[in-house]
Amino acid sequence: SVTTADLNGDGRIDIVTTNTSDNTVTVFLNQGSGTFLGSNPAYNSTVSQPISVVARDMNNDGRIDLVVASWYSDNVAVLLNQGAGVFPTTNPTISVAHAYQIDVGDLNGDGLMDIASSGGYVLNQGSMAFSTQTGFGMTSDCLGFRIGDLNGDAKPDVLCANYSGGTVSVAINRGNGTFYNTTQSYPANASPYPCAMADVNLDGLLDAVVPNPDANTCTVLLNTGYVPCP
Image (tube, rainbow, N blue to C red; front, top):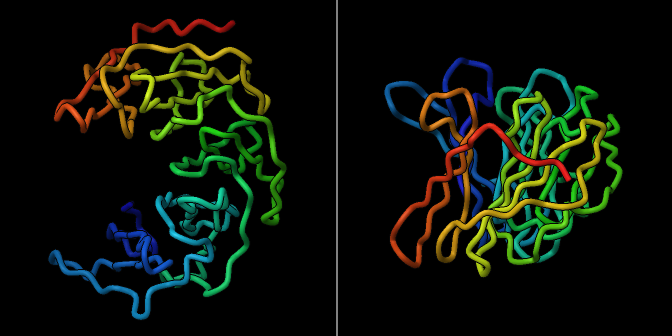
């Protein structure tokens, strides 16, 4: 997995990669002119077989931190940025079910970044303490996962790509850190994985973009502006 962000505050976009077989994360700091300097040695990911990484400010100190998910252990690690794009070698881990692909967003409107996967989510209580919440009602074959406002109410909702089912599912946020119990599912052709949100037709609504790697195609689901809340 790879993500990008300005990790050292110099206005340049840096690169972060997970190295699954080595249990490490590598930070490539942008030197300008298209050159990068990789962290040597790579940072210990803390979780085994890191598979995905998200870059966000998790403790509101103005620095971009890293949230790293494990492939098999249902754990995520939070690597707090120490400044200048430097990260510690030991980091706290948090239990998050089905943490194959994760995303981060303020799910309850308290100004703190929460962590979510298809199997559930944890709410940030501050000082790197998190409280575990129930899941979204997603299936266990959800291999693509993203957070974004799908119904225009300024509350982050959840999009999940169901690999075996050939669908994408949507869970709508109530705004208080809870979600409506029933998810809405939509056909997305064969074996959708992973998924992304983007306003592809510039109508102000986030659409769903889902690759279908087994068919060498990509499915785009246009947001009609109405996502039912059960």
